[in-house]
Amino acid sequence: MATTVQVNRFSTEKDLQEEVCKLIAQKSTLSIEDHGFFTIALSGGSSAKIVCSGLTHQAIDFSKWKVLFCDERYVPLSDENSNYKLAKEFLLDKTSISEENVVALNPSLSLEESAKDYEQKLKSLHPKSTGVPSLDLLVLGMGPDGHICSLFPGHSLLDETDQLVASLADSPKPPPCRITLTYPVINNAKCAVFVTTGSSKAEMVQRALEGNEENPVPAARVKLLNGHVYWFLDDGSASLLKK
Image (spheres, rainbow, N blue to C red):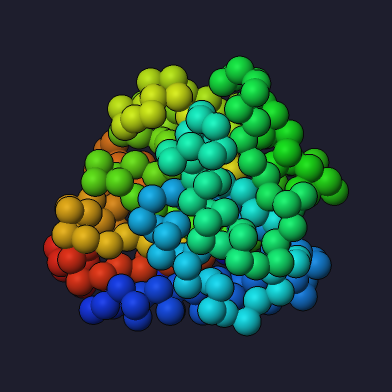
């Protein structure tokens, strides 16, 4: 089965939040019924706040969740730039997700070693898998330049195929040092959910969904091998779509 793409538009952020969190709750239930747990990778920024704060209102068995991050800034976990800190504040501290089921960056290691450590933790989530792990769901935001995770336009990591988790020290968006999932693991996920709001994202939404560029923006490169991609947009971010 090839990837399928579904675009959902909402006039209010509240409606968007409710529907995306309903979808995640449904995917969680199906995954737990299928293999006993649910692996979800969260992004940072506004998409994470919308999703994390909304999930606490859903009927979800959080004790079966395994949480990791699509990318992470190479900072202490208590730093304001940490995606882990945001998730902890809005989701982890308010649910039954156990600390041992949260895959966090180890900032005591070097940048390169922290990426290798994170990749090993990622693989341990699916100990029976010998290939690229297939995460149940990714929550993706998209920057005004079309970047996802810490995969930026024109960056060499767009073509990375050997590492599942890579490090970079030259992020065009501060902080410069980060680790990120790469496309082999992103596109092997069962489901990817984009949460994109605001008119500043409208051009990139249009290019990602309707563009046919020789060098597509990073968001357009999310083409799951066998899964579903959902876009949750508000009126501002969807304003340039023709359909």
